Length: 138
Figure 1 (cartoon, one colour):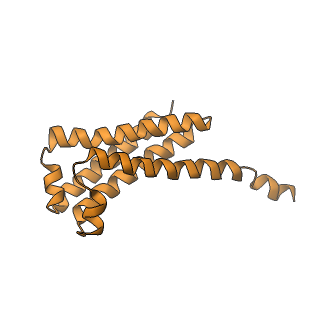
Figure 2 (figure 1 turned 30 degrees about the horizontal axis):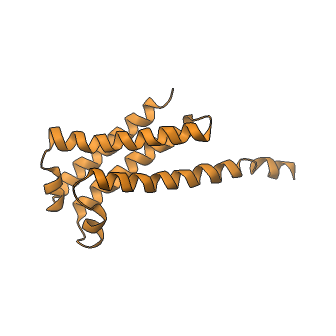
Figure 3 (figure 1 turned 180 degrees about the horizontal axis):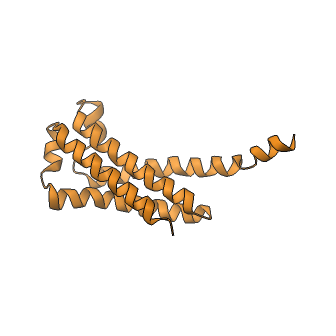
C-alpha cells in the first residue's frame, strides 16, 4: 500500500502544474493572435488554410517545448509562471523577428495559403522554443 501511495504522492503537483500549463497555453494563443496580423483560428477553421495551421501549430509546439523547459527547471509554481510568461514573450518575438527582418511578407503569404511560409514559420517557432527551453536550464 505504501508503494502505491508513494507513486501517486506527486499527483497534486502534477494536476496543478498541468492546469497552469493549459492556462498558459490559452494565454499564449490569445497573445499570439494579437501579435500576428491575421486571425489564425479563422484562417484554419473557416478557410481551411494549411499554411496558417502549420505556422500556428509550430508556434504552439515551440511554446510547449519552452513551457516544458520551464516546468522542468522551476522550483516553485511562481517560478514556472514567470518563465512561462518569458516563453510567451520569446515566441511572440520570434514571429516579429521573422516578420520584420527575414520575411516581411510572411503574414500575406500565410493569408494566401502558401505552405512554404507556414512551414518556415513553424520551423522558426520550434527552433526558438528549443533554444528558449535550453536557456531556462539555469
